[in-house]
Image 1: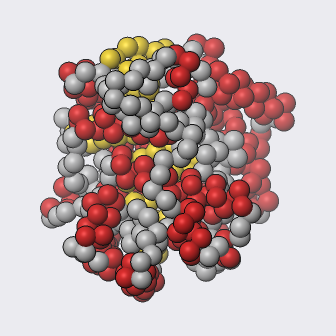
Image 2 (image 1 turned 90 degrees about the horizontal axis):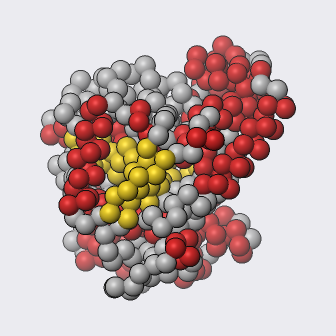
Image 3 (image 1 turned 90 degrees about the vertical axis):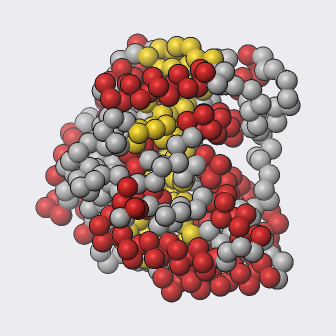
Length: 483
């Protein structure tokens, strides 16, 4: 069964080979066929999606092209507000919630002409208690899909949508993407706004796209960033931005102006390292991360990672070593401290009166946060600030750091969303990360590699990731699609 990438579908739409309604119907048919097993969706707006598809086709006929996402079906993690819809965040406490307006990134997707199919499943309040979603790579549907963006990852993997929005506080973009065999981008902290998103931790939360390939991530990221920046910079309200203004200003298919283009043969000096090119014309210089947390991968993941590195070296990449600084060896404890306190601060009024309606793992997190003293929390923020200042200069002359995305392939249990060891440190640093599937492990489950870049240099990092993706050439769909 074919899974459309955003790039393929966008080109086919513009050539007239398919219509937006064809794409929507393909996604809906797959949802009807498989979602009773996969459980990736909370709500699906079939009528609204068909109506939006018709509107996209009418706009094209009228000469209005909103850019690379025009007519593309996408899913929205159920912690983002969508006007008129509940934002349940995986919790029974929010069963009767209704959003009055779109989250800013959701509004940007609407204006870009993306077709919003519905809301994808999240674990409860985007924390630790597993969601009902199943991993479509699991022969028995008994492996975790990861969390907390579990529904978004599974839906993209199954071709139920072509892209999706997710979030990450610890590892909630990278881990489910890796477990489900898709790609994701965790941008630099603060790069994409979180207006209208149920928070976990104000100092750690990131929003980002999930898709089948790196080029799809690039197109989604450009639209999200350019659109959000234009709205915020011009102080235009979501409801009042005119469609023609959106078309002309928000969604021109141009790289952000801060990202220079590297000409063939041009070399970068160390001083230019913070302004890397968006178009990589040579094999990259990669530094494999070594040290206390990068060495936690199990033998299966280590073998897959070494094979992936060998293919990159054979294709001309320079691969060196980079060690996580020992002075920040407490990064996982630091992550837990800040996440626990800030989650507890948000939930405290409700948690004190409705404790029994919270899951066991988020209850444990909130209890921990309520016990932490203000002095310890402020000390943690100081440590986080120092870490981010140091991390901004870590790459030196390297194009990217490289390491496994996860410690294992998806665990064969539904009682966990997986181990945050490989992802949470990068949520703390705030550095951008791209995770790409690199192949199948011996157990038949997908494994992934993550690339870490410089702050605010997503375009350069995506170019490195696209080069690596080409060498690995992983395009396998989940076995469930063959049933």
